[in-house]
Length: 569
Image 1 (tube, rainbow, N blue to C red):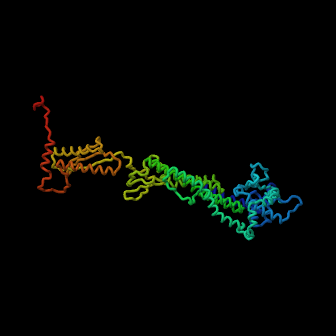
Image 2: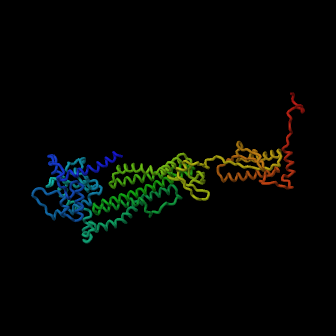
Image 3: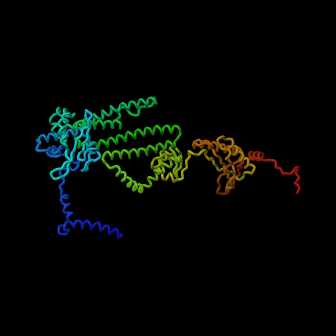
């Protein structure tokens, strides 16, 4: 704590001492080294921002776009010798250069222009030269604007637009594509400007929107017809998914590119095209993401349908989870590409995301726990979509296994959402994986049955189980459990060799009715619960059936010795 306070105190005091050292009367006498460094520190900076190549071009564009051509001409290379240029010619040249840049230079080239006073040193040009490259002309040559670094009257090294380039501008201006169109328009549309851009260009940009959408729809019509023909060939009975007039992501992608070309063709201001490029870049990314998501969804749906028809429910759930993870990955990649196109330092953004991701990970432990739980559920195939199961105290059919939770459709037809982290750690009972279902009943017989009669009842119950083909004979049993308070309890225990619970209920009902018939056949009776003495004159057991049961169960008793003699001692 003491060391921390010392550091903070030093951080506050040292700047104050440094400022005090600069105050006259408090500072010491300057040394020779300081006196020599003073003139270089007071060298005036250029008010027009011509210290860098990008500053020169952007300063010229803003001045010329505001029709301040006298200021824009100051970014031109000064005339050499005693020759003085006509200011009117310089103003016309500035206006022509602005029009040429608007139609010959791409916004991406302008954004990539170096913002360092030294310029780029790895472009193969002399250190005092820079090139602003544009589009390819009809002859195949690459149009470019050359910048030179020269000393001004104050000894500052500033960047200017080369006179060699300016000499070619009038000829290039006469060859512009929109110059003939502009001459045919009413003078009001050409002279009147909105936000420093001619009114006719704003109208053309707005009119280009429906034209671009129409052109995008026509261009996307051919691949849509090919896809429809391919689907019809695979499945003649399949109905078309969407009408031909549907506007999807492919149409929007093509429309955005067509509109971008039209805006560039009419020579819209490159300053505004920088912002327009950012908007169109974002729009293209959204349309591209929409198209990719639609393709992946259709592919995964077809794959899931095939897996469902073949009974591979676990694989279907994994495919569903993989599609959602892929959607997130594609979104992150598209977002990084958009940020890179907008000039954001993606490396720094990724580093920030790493630090932020660590903080988010610490605060979102439950979310990652649910995500990993869902992956473990699907990879272990503990649950798949369509499984009847019990998770903790909830029972139902699995409807969906997502990145965060699992959804159950309960017997009350409600949907219960359980976090995957809870599912992964809870006691999970999957009814689909059972190979047979337990049939267990507790039969209570009256105490007034004789032992022989009781044996007869047990034999008849065992016979009912053996005669049923759906009962597993190796594990079935009918045994007396105990002498209870008001009855003799007999357990009927067997496995029914079915998996479907509805089928099990039907077979269980059949077995119970057969056992009841067997008990009635033997003349026995099921005991009733009693809470006190019962006095009755009715015979609960049919004497005739009891006599028959006794006769059936009697067996000759053998003493174990021949002729009735006892074995020798």
